[in-house]
Amino acid sequence: MRIPLIIAALTAIATSPAAAQAAGDAAAGERVFGQCRACHQVGETARNLVGPQLNGLFGRRAGSVPGYNYSPAYKAPAVAEKTWSPENFATYIRDPRTVTPGTRMVFAGLRDEGQIANLVAYLQQFGADGKKAP
Image (tube, rainbow, N blue to C red):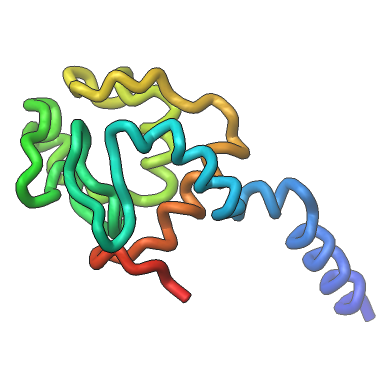
């Protein structure tokens, strides 16, 4: 039977360093978030700063945090109709100004795929209420 070989292969893939990196490490992502902290907050007491708070980011429409004055770029239908996902956030955070021309976000971007995966894992912990998922 080949089933044990298939299971062993899938287990090896799932536990490989590349798979672990793709899943991200939330603790390492918290350190990466240090680069974002000057402009963004997460957590139960998060508020808008230079940039919007990032609680409940994934699944939220772009440019939709109440009380935040977004760049005109985020008010354009092509952007405002988008919903944040880990995949489009990863694309965005590599080079925000190229992905969303006209944004006021001055961050140059993250180029390291591991850092991006870790940042996504960190941000995914926070619900819209700012509470960390258990």
